[in-house]
Length: 119
Image (cartoon, rainbow, N blue to C red; front, side, top):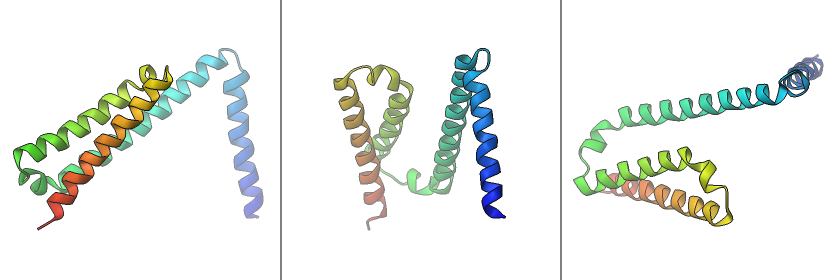
C-alpha cells in the first residue's frame, strides 16, 4: 500500500514538472518556480540565523568588540557571497575565490564560537 502511495506522489510531481517544462512559457515557468524555491530556502536560512542570534544574544553581547566585529563581518561576507554568486561562478577563478572566501568566513565564525565557549 505504501509503495502505491509513493508511486502516486512521484507521478504527481512528474506531471507538474512536465507541465512546467513543456507547457507554453515553460522555460519562464521553470525559472519562476526555481526562483520561488530559492527565495523560500533563503528565507528559512534567515529565520534560522535570526533564531540562533536570539538564543545566543547574551553570548554575542559579552563578546569583545573585535570578536563581535569578526563574527558580524563573517556573516556579512556570507550574505554578500550568496548575493553575488552568479558573478563569482562565471569563471573558474571566481568560483575558487568564492569557495575560499566562504571557507574563511566559516572558519572565522567557528573560531569566534570556539573562543566564546572556552573559559
